[in-house]
Amino acid sequence: MGAGIFVGSALLSLILVTIVLVKLPEDYFDDRKRRPTHDSRHPLLRFLAVVGKNLIGVVMVAVGVLLSVPGVPGQGFLTVLLGLMLIDFPGKYRIERAFLRQRKLLKGANAIRSKFGKPKFTVSPRQKGELRALRRGGAPAPDATSSGAS
Image (cartoon, rainbow, N blue to C red; front, side, top):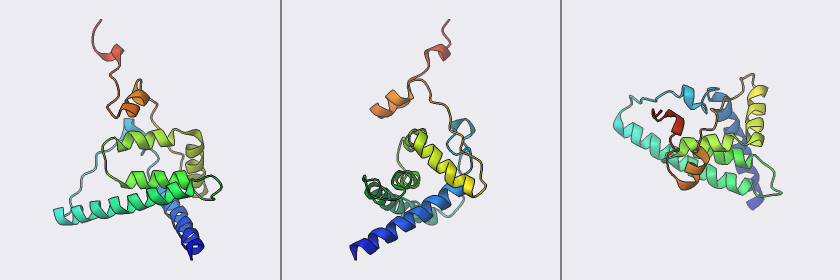
Protein backbone atom coordinates (compact mmCIF):
# COMPACT_ATOMS: atom_id res chain seq x y z
CA MET A 1 0.00 0.00 0.00
CA GLY A 2 2.71 2.48 1.01
CA ALA A 3 4.79 1.63 -2.07
CA GLY A 4 1.79 2.29 -4.31
CA ILE A 5 1.19 5.69 -2.72
CA PHE A 6 4.88 6.52 -3.10
CA VAL A 7 4.99 5.49 -6.76
CA GLY A 8 1.73 7.33 -7.49
CA SER A 9 2.90 10.53 -5.82
CA ALA A 10 6.26 10.34 -7.60
CA LEU A 11 4.53 9.91 -10.95
CA LEU A 12 2.07 12.71 -10.22
CA SER A 13 4.86 15.10 -9.18
CA LEU A 14 6.83 14.28 -12.32
CA ILE A 15 3.79 15.00 -14.50
CA LEU A 16 3.00 18.26 -12.67
CA VAL A 17 6.62 19.45 -12.76
CA THR A 18 6.75 18.77 -16.49
CA ILE A 19 3.50 20.63 -17.18
CA VAL A 20 4.48 23.68 -15.16
CA LEU A 21 8.03 23.88 -16.54
CA VAL A 22 6.71 23.68 -20.08
CA LYS A 23 3.95 26.26 -19.51
CA LEU A 24 6.13 28.89 -17.79
CA PRO A 25 7.43 31.70 -19.99
CA GLU A 26 11.16 31.52 -20.68
CA ASP A 27 11.79 34.79 -18.79
CA TYR A 28 9.82 33.85 -15.64
CA PHE A 29 13.02 33.78 -13.55
CA ASP A 30 14.48 36.94 -15.11
CA ASP A 31 13.50 39.91 -12.91
CA ARG A 32 14.65 42.31 -15.63
CA LYS A 33 11.56 41.24 -17.59
CA ARG A 34 9.19 40.52 -14.71
CA ARG A 35 5.56 41.37 -15.49
CA PRO A 36 3.08 42.42 -12.81
CA THR A 37 0.07 40.15 -12.43
CA HIS A 38 -3.41 41.61 -12.15
CA ASP A 39 -6.33 39.43 -11.24
CA SER A 40 -9.77 40.62 -12.26
CA ARG A 41 -11.74 37.72 -10.77
CA HIS A 42 -14.30 38.12 -8.02
CA PRO A 43 -12.59 38.54 -4.60
CA LEU A 44 -14.12 35.31 -3.20
CA LEU A 45 -12.96 33.27 -6.19
CA ARG A 46 -9.52 34.87 -5.99
CA PHE A 47 -9.32 34.02 -2.25
CA LEU A 48 -10.36 30.40 -2.83
CA ALA A 49 -7.87 30.08 -5.69
CA VAL A 50 -5.05 31.45 -3.52
CA VAL A 51 -5.89 29.12 -0.62
CA GLY A 52 -6.12 26.10 -2.95
CA LYS A 53 -2.90 27.01 -4.72
CA ASN A 54 -1.06 27.36 -1.40
CA LEU A 55 -2.37 24.01 -0.12
CA ILE A 56 -1.27 22.25 -3.29
CA GLY A 57 2.11 23.99 -2.99
CA VAL A 58 2.63 22.76 0.57
CA VAL A 59 1.82 19.20 -0.49
CA MET A 60 4.22 19.49 -3.44
CA VAL A 61 7.03 20.72 -1.17
CA ALA A 62 6.43 17.81 1.22
CA VAL A 63 6.43 15.26 -1.62
CA GLY A 64 9.52 16.89 -3.13
CA VAL A 65 11.39 16.67 0.16
CA LEU A 66 10.54 12.95 0.36
CA LEU A 67 11.64 12.43 -3.24
CA SER A 68 14.93 14.27 -2.72
CA VAL A 69 16.17 11.80 -0.09
CA PRO A 70 19.33 10.09 -1.43
CA GLY A 71 18.58 6.79 -3.11
CA VAL A 72 14.97 7.70 -3.90
CA PRO A 73 14.31 8.07 -7.62
CA GLY A 74 12.35 11.07 -8.79
CA GLN A 75 12.37 14.79 -9.46
CA GLY A 76 12.67 15.81 -5.79
CA PHE A 77 14.24 19.23 -6.02
CA LEU A 78 12.21 20.22 -9.07
CA THR A 79 9.07 19.19 -7.17
CA VAL A 80 10.13 21.37 -4.22
CA LEU A 81 10.70 24.24 -6.66
CA LEU A 82 7.24 23.74 -8.13
CA GLY A 83 5.70 23.72 -4.65
CA LEU A 84 7.53 26.90 -3.71
CA MET A 85 6.28 28.54 -6.89
CA LEU A 86 2.70 27.80 -5.84
CA ILE A 87 3.02 29.07 -2.26
CA ASP A 88 2.70 32.81 -1.57
CA PHE A 89 5.22 34.15 0.96
CA PRO A 90 7.63 37.10 1.22
CA GLY A 91 10.92 36.52 -0.59
CA LYS A 92 9.51 33.69 -2.71
CA TYR A 93 10.85 35.03 -5.98
CA ARG A 94 14.42 35.31 -4.63
CA ILE A 95 14.31 31.71 -3.40
CA GLU A 96 12.98 30.47 -6.76
CA ARG A 97 15.83 32.21 -8.56
CA ALA A 98 18.39 30.84 -6.09
CA PHE A 99 17.06 27.32 -6.70
CA LEU A 100 17.22 27.67 -10.46
CA ARG A 101 20.71 29.18 -10.40
CA GLN A 102 21.96 25.79 -9.28
CA ARG A 103 23.51 24.37 -12.42
CA LYS A 104 21.98 20.88 -12.10
CA LEU A 105 18.45 22.18 -11.55
CA LEU A 106 18.63 24.65 -14.42
CA LYS A 107 20.05 21.96 -16.68
CA GLY A 108 17.26 19.54 -15.68
CA ALA A 109 14.52 22.14 -16.13
CA ASN A 110 15.88 23.18 -19.52
CA ALA A 111 16.19 19.52 -20.60
CA ILE A 112 12.50 18.99 -19.86
CA ARG A 113 11.61 22.18 -21.76
CA SER A 114 13.74 21.20 -24.77
CA LYS A 115 11.88 17.87 -25.10
CA PHE A 116 8.74 19.91 -25.74
CA GLY A 117 10.39 22.41 -28.10
CA LYS A 118 10.42 25.27 -25.58
CA PRO A 119 13.31 27.74 -25.24
CA LYS A 120 15.65 27.58 -22.26
CA PHE A 121 14.92 29.63 -19.13
CA THR A 122 16.73 32.93 -18.75
CA VAL A 123 17.74 33.69 -15.18
CA SER A 124 18.68 37.20 -14.11
CA PRO A 125 22.28 37.60 -12.96
CA ARG A 126 22.97 37.51 -9.25
CA GLN A 127 22.93 40.99 -7.79
CA LYS A 128 25.60 42.25 -5.43
CA GLY A 129 24.67 41.32 -1.86
CA GLU A 130 21.71 39.16 -2.91
CA LEU A 131 23.00 35.90 -1.41
CA ARG A 132 23.88 37.60 1.87
CA ALA A 133 20.44 39.23 2.03
CA LEU A 134 18.74 35.92 1.26
CA ARG A 135 20.50 34.29 4.21
CA ARG A 136 19.40 37.16 6.48
CA GLY A 137 15.88 37.17 5.09
CA GLY A 138 16.00 40.77 3.91
CA ALA A 139 16.25 42.72 0.69
CA PRO A 140 19.48 42.80 -1.31
CA ALA A 141 22.01 45.34 -0.13
CA PRO A 142 22.04 48.50 -2.27
CA ASP A 143 24.91 48.78 -4.68
CA ALA A 144 27.36 51.41 -3.44
CA THR A 145 28.12 52.50 -6.99
CA SER A 146 24.49 53.43 -7.69
CA SER A 147 23.92 55.60 -4.62
CA GLY A 148 24.55 58.78 -6.58
CA ALA A 149 27.53 59.84 -4.45
CA SER A 150 30.64 60.85 -6.39
